Structure formats: structure tokens, C-alpha cells
Image (tube, rainbow, N blue to C red; front, top):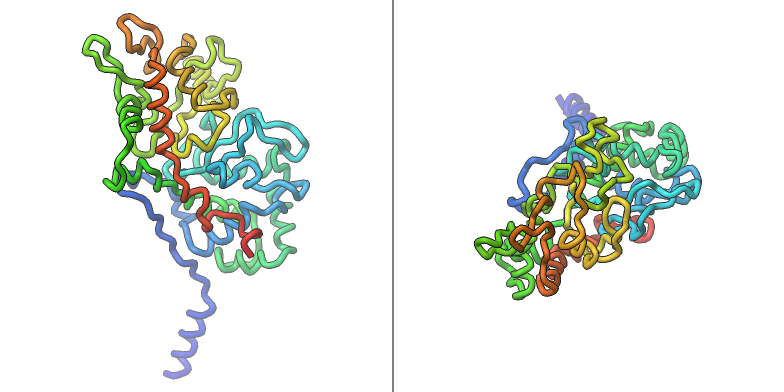
Length: 351
């Protein structure tokens, strides 16, 4: 009996079972999250993924990591219109924030990746981004301490695979939850907005109706709900003749020409420049666009057509004060704790 007990104890000690890591977020975010059954979020997987996120060995020149284009201080964007890859080539579109990806299903500006695992593999292997085959990355990590041991803890085997690399990185990325802005504190009745912030919030969610003397910016059509995004693609009137086909390049449907994914506005004050091509440097420029410069085209979002605060108007025509108030509300979406959280920071700098 004693020997049998020792055998059972020995098996328990040698069997690697990663520890589940529950994700914490407000109930008003909802539970429609996307976590594959074969890649659950675990303590060990996230720890490994965090290290890999900052690991330059995953690039062909050993100089670029995921964090190069997704910097924590910029809410995991990089502050540039376009990012520079291993061969000096600029990306075709602006680097997107990684906040709250666990609620996202379709990735990239054109939605071409169905799931975070598929998305993560693209920049790692693209010849103009990190430029390295996953098998080569696995080979480099296999020869570098402490990776074999970390992979064993996370996945039960010290043999490093392409799938393990992707799974670890995406586990870490799913923990990048931003939910502690002043807007969240307001929703939790812990913060009283200023009059400017309150008016900006009202404008953000209100639809203009000049006949009833209701003024609004109608942002909530696309950026509604506490997470401030919808799983939709819209042509937001940047150009009358879109130079970038956007979603049409994936679906081959002419009605998708110039449509791009609706991104979250969480931490928007930190993620300049704006739009898929980084054309706007400030929030003032963004608000001016939606207020006064939406370009009509065949695929323009219906939510931006003839939407005005004046009778028979073709543009929103917000006042100067309304623009300031709207921007004040957008600053309420900044989560300072998100950009300083050590759980998300570079582990190589925190030794």
C-alpha cells in the first residue's frame, strides 16, 4: 500500500498540469470571449508568452520583437503611421492596439485573420515584418535557456514547436485587458465626470435630430457599449475614392471597398496617429473629420450619410465647444494602470 501511494505521489509530482488563469474584467464587458478549447489561458503559458512577446530572437535580425510595434506606453501601438520591419520595409497599415483582444474574433484592419492564433503567426513570419519561419524561431529558442524548461511548464514538453510559440504569445495577449479608465470608474459610480466630460459623453452616444433640437455626434453606432467597439467593418469617409480596398481585398465584394474594422477607442488618447493609414496626428483632427469632412462614396457607412445637427445638413457640424467636450470624453477612456501594469511589461528589463 505504501509503495502504491509513493507511485501515485510520484506521478502527481512529475505530471505537468498548467494552472488555469481566470481573466478578470467588469461584468458590463460581457462574457462573449474567444478562447480556443485547445489553448486555455494558464499561469505558465502567460508567463512564457510575456517573455516571447518581448523576445527579439523571434525575428530574422534578432532586433525586433512583438513589442517593437506594440509598446505598452502607447497602449500597445507604436506611435508611428507605419512600422518598420526587419528589411527596412514599412508596413502597409497602422499598428493596432492589443487591448481587449479576448473579445475580438476577426483581426487586422481588413479582418483577414479568423482568430488570434492565426493573427499572431502573420507578423512573426511575414518577410517584411519579423521575417522568420516559425521552425527557425523554435530552433533558436530550443538552444536558449530557459526556454525548454518554460515550454515544459506551459505545455508539458521541453520540445519547442511553432504551435507552442503561437499559443504562448496569444495566451499573454488575451490577458491585456484595459478596464480601469475614468469612464470605468464612472460606470462603477466611483467618479463624477466634469461638465465637459458629461456633455462629451452625451454627444458621443446621441444621434443628432435638429427637428427635436437634439445634438449628437453619433459615435455610438460603431463604438457603442463599454468596450467602445463593434465587430463590424465600415467605410468612414476618409476618401471619396479609397486608395486602400480594405475589407474588399478579402471578401472580393465591391460593397466592402474602403471598409475597415471598427477598433476600440479605449486609450485612444495614447494611440496616435489615427486611422488605418495613420493620416491624423491628433484627436482634434479626427473629430474635425467626422464633424466636417466626411467624404461621400458608394460604400460610405450608412451611419455617416446625411447625419447632421442642422436641418438638411450633410455633415455633423459640431461647434468648437462640442468638439472640445467630445475630446474630453475620449480622454476619459485612458487607462493609466494599463500602460504601467508590470504584468504586461518587458520581463528582460525587470530582472
